[in-house]
Image (cartoon, rainbow, N blue to C red; front, side, top):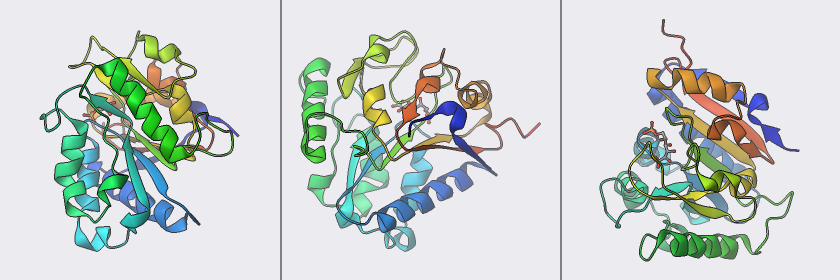
Length: 246
Ligand code: 6PG
């Protein structure tokens, strides 16, 4: 089964806090219900997931997650030094990872130490090690959850309009140098994101109204519209992004 954006399930919630709480509940559920092995989750970047990280770090929520089973990856990363204010990993570490008992070896930041091309290849190798194979097998997804955001230009992860990485069919990790956002970036590719049991978009705020509407139509002219999953796709949006406030 392959799901495209036209067949995504959309859940419109009151506000950004409700979206974050719903994602936290889903996070708990997926970890609890996976029968065996590590639960591999790719975190989204940008500002939207910060509310989620804060909620997951609350003792009464974190206590519901068996962190020894969780293995965290990133959907993308700005190519900046570790600890940089714009680093997605720095944000996740500050708000969540430093507050829960996830084993350090189960957190996999995207490296930003040599060149973007070399570090993309290094990250692919770490994904292959975690997956236990060098090629993706249908029916055995790389990720249990891939979390994604939505940019106001229709990008997701760091799959930006016009970037060559949009055409990548084999590599799991690529490089992007967007014109509409700062920094060179590393990003999961479409094939890597497709190897998922569940893709969840977190979309909040009125500035996302136009692109959320196009995403829901599966508009392939925007990068996010071309996302597919071998599992399911869920869009968690607030009323503002769904255009239901007016
Ligand atoms: C990044 C993200 C990117 C983000 C969208 C939405 O590293 O920038 O992965 O894809 O999810 O740009 O960003 P906001 O959540 O800040 O609106």
